[in-house]
Image (tube, rainbow, N blue to C red; front, side, top):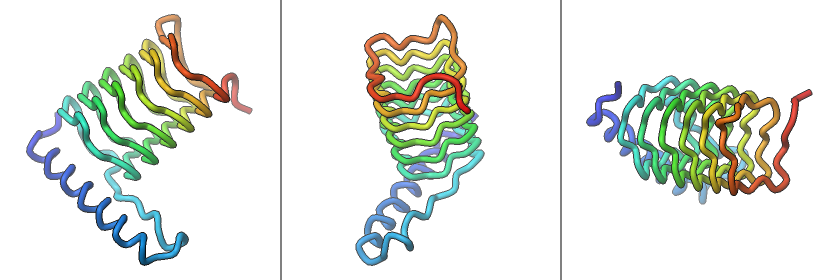
Length: 164
């Protein structure tokens, strides 16, 4: 389980890193940009992270089990094999995230923005994606069941089916 004081320190560091990256982006060419802060395999289980900013962060293998991530920003984050089991990602920004093979079992994605997200092989069993934006998302080979809810979700141009 994550220590909330440590979590707050990490979040401040992420904000400082993103602010520095934005400041430097004005001075660097595109090829020199896009370094990712590496928080891979970090433990955020049960953490209170509502509104947290993880934009562009490498969180591969990170554990967010049962975390409160309401309104969190993960835009462009690398979340390969991350564990979000039973987490609350209501109204979170997950645009252009890489969520391949992630555990999203019983996750609340209500009104979350997953536009252009790569969810290939993600476990979406019992996930609630009610009114989520999945426009242009890659949902090929996801694991789902009869309890996975897509009611009112925007699936415009989403890739659905098996992956070849």
